[in-house]
Length: 543
Image 1 (cartoon, one colour):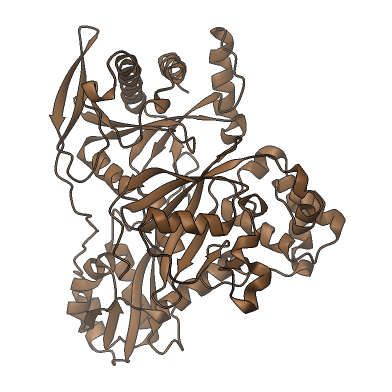
Image 2 (cartoon, helix red, strand yellow; image 1 turned 90 degrees about the horizontal axis):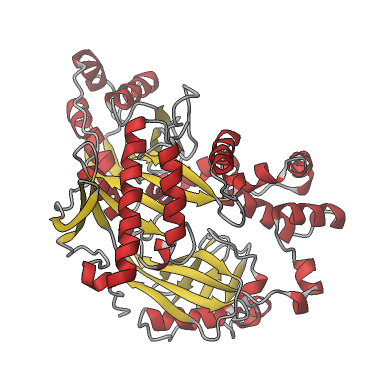
């Protein structure tokens, strides 16, 4: 499955603990065996994900630039697509339950033959390939394995040189939009030679731009009557599809069409060929209009991807297009779609069978549950409508705390801290380390200081990550109707925070400054004073 050389280098790399020396943005380049240039990012400086990422060529580097800039303020669907944008090979280190049985057995076999003890947290190497629009998948290709071997060798060399000379002497600096070059390692006669390589300029995002060449269909569309104003958007579907079990599951694209009056939503058109054959989606769109016997008089869209897909089609079908930032009908339709996919909050009576099934899963299966599903069950427990016995068993299975438990055990909480990423807009974020004993009000004050705001308005935290949701919200002290949910009365240890948990911080109910927060790491240590441990981007002007 994996070569012994790949395992050997992975275990050597792990011993270097290079992630304690470099930030993920302090990249270096390596000349790969096939002549390509690979760009290496070392992840794990704050413990959220310990891995070496190899981004191959200009295409890989551009995907790294997207990841480095962050998702900005986006919807759940767009954030999901942002996570799928990586184009890289990774050597990560995971717990056993994060790997398949095949991967676990391969690692154990190598470890047995080489007298390596697989003990402790994140003991197992995990080799995986990330492709845009696909689920991460096994690293099966021999060329990919050779490339990752070269990157690991280079990383081992970098660790040795950083220990001897320091990062500054080697030219290892945090990459930003102005970075022109990075260190390059080339292996010659068994020895690494260091130089620098100029970075290619960032390329704009390119979307599939099909030509609609079906003259017969175009003529039929022109004969259809026009029917008002409609809103349209192309979105990446959040559920993967897999035709071949040997291939990575693919996240298809959907085209949504909703009347501007919100009184009609046409069936979403789904394409599993969008990235290679975008014409497939146009043909389905045309068939839908012919079936319904109308064409929109005006289509409102808001993004470039939808525009380049439909530009030629609409010109030939006599449909006018306009760009419009606000598409309320589409937003409502997307929310409805997500609800039909399981986001609706179920009642206790309707979830008993699901809970029984959940309780039958073993620890490995439970660990693979998406955070969204864990949060769904957490919200069910928070209602306290289930029997105590079932509530306690479910909370224990998912390692959740219920309100009842928090009332009973306040003195016994472990001392712990959190590293939380707070993003204000694309490319502008702060990583904050804060004690679990600090309150949400304390976190509010740190965010205000970190972004140089004046701290002169009310605020709220929405822990279910839904703005203005009443399910799990905490408000600034002094807002009368929300006294029982005062941010000054709840410490972070009471909020079921875990790595990956997302929530929103809203400041100023008039201007509505929305900050996206995400827990990067849970530390088993006390933090005396909240601190900003990483800064990216200039903060916006408050006024």
